Image (cartoon, rainbow, N blue to C red):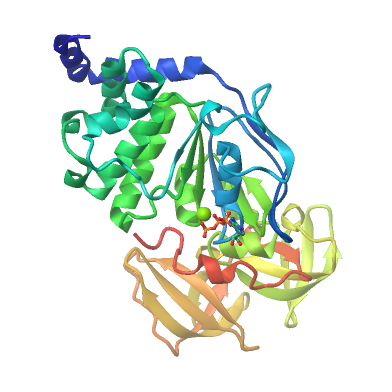
Length: 399
Ligand SMILES: Nc1ncnc2c1ncn2[C@@H]1O[C@H](COP(=O)(O)OP(=O)(O)OP(=O)(O)O)[C@@H](O)[C@H]1O
Ligand SMILES: [Mg+2]
């Protein structure tokens, strides 16, 4: 390959990208499947009987608190950790016993681990050179084009920003045309603004190349913005799996309700169970919720409403919950209120800053909501499960 043809690739980013996308899609692969996948370290079970099918070409997020087994799961898929039990396959091929470098899988770790003495081009070319690939220049340039670093090929990693280095790490993985790309907290080292920018970039790249992305994160907002499907993991198990909106709107456990955003859970008793509507009673007041949003067979439930579904009214109203504001946090796009109810419990309400005056602690308010937004969870579950981890990541209110 001559320099002239390299130049041509460089000056035609669109065709370069299209080619990169096509070549990758043609590689095929199939769904990534884990069957009864288990990993024990001594007596401790880090990954517990995991059954998971990740459709080819999807952007899948494994979301859960620190220590729940996310990295261990990825390491087993990559072949860096041997499963105690269970199998892993891609399409029809069982790769459980396949050596790591022979798996059609690449990993981008939180620490990019670029070679500091090699320039960006050579960092990306590294895997191709080792395998004795042909057309290295073209492939590397296409990959750099994809991550929008075509002009930076001759720089050293130390001369790039954190976000740019992250994109080099991504190009270095994508250039190998894996069927599955594993991303383990790849944005963890970046500041919030850059992280948001890279989330959008990553999503664009994934759509463009059509690879299967398995993205590990403990940041619920990151999982929600990027993934088609999220699996919420807790203590080595999948607690709930679904699309971002579905998981957020219909959490089936207190852990998911608390880990994915915030929830207000009030203890209640079911008084009547219709086919469409459930009637419940909490602290002497009657409420209803859609029967399909009840995830408990018991009559003892947690009655839940998300903070942004609550409307805050001033003065007395016949309906709704009365309370007193105990804390006001201005967050820019919205204001978060803590409201103490007559029985002492504090619940959270979030209001968009639409120009209405900010309410102050001490003010009497009435909270109302559309009954269609209420849900019911089993009262045998810990109302605070998953809470310690999710805090500080208020959905849509920060960043
Ligand atoms: N080699 C090991 N020996 C013993 N225990 C281990 C080993 N590797 C991981 N563990 C334990 O297994 C559990 C899961 O670890 P893992 O690294 O998968 O967590 P994680 O979900 O990736 O967490 P984080 O978000 O903090 O990265 C942890 O409790 C961890 O201490
Ligand atoms: Mg980890």
